[in-house]
Image 1 (cartoon, rainbow, N blue to C red):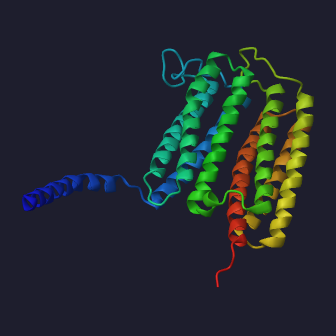
Image 2 (cartoon, helix red, strand yellow):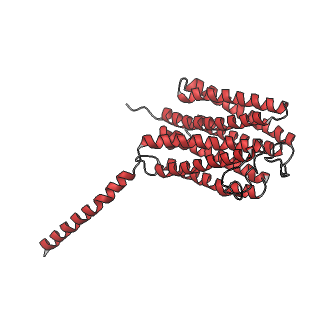
Image 3 (cartoon, one colour):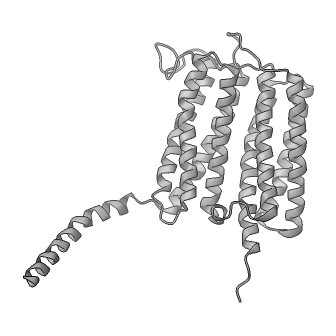
Length: 326
């Protein structure tokens, strides 16, 4: 009896092993290499940057209603016909669609790469969800004739997605960034600078919402608040961010001179100087749309740089604080 049961059990486990072999093979085929994942993460981040910059062009060239229908451009045509405004807006829609697919693909890949921290995968999943949410939000924005609050939400969500994707991409290459997000007092300073920079972007969005570029010249669009009051607040937030970034750069120079984080802090200060110069020029020269477009592109670039810097500082400080093994 016992021997019969043992023989039956052995046969049963052999059958299960053979049955599971194809499943394991399929699972291996579905796995993704770390190198492919890293490349995809970088490509997605570049696409998300393009979404921000082309979206700014849509607004600044008054092309926000260049395609009055969604998802097609005109009621009887998928692509724009004979209008530069329609071409600009549809180009942004196309890039946004590609970026959405790339963000979703990157998030799926994150769960199939062996050894990737689940916090990275979750962050990329949130970034993908935010990118997908841009689709209905964009449709609603067009349907409500570029309501300034909806336009602002559209822009700020794009910047939030860029922030998440940047942190996750850095953590893919530097896993310590996921394990030690803060990393002591210098890490707190770095993330405080990143938080204030996000506040600077929000205040800048209010400046634009009160400014002379509503996004369309064919439909009257409400402006929000007073331009000069919004600009006053924007400058104060910019000053706060400058103080924090310079303090962080000095601290890194003294404690981690020569490190990637220290060199990147210098790049951040240079970008901030360029951003300030462009902002001052546009303010004193009637807010030309092409200069504002450069201002937005620099803002997105500096955001990626500052989030990368904070991620690196957290990992660097945590590693420096670890006791030395003897």
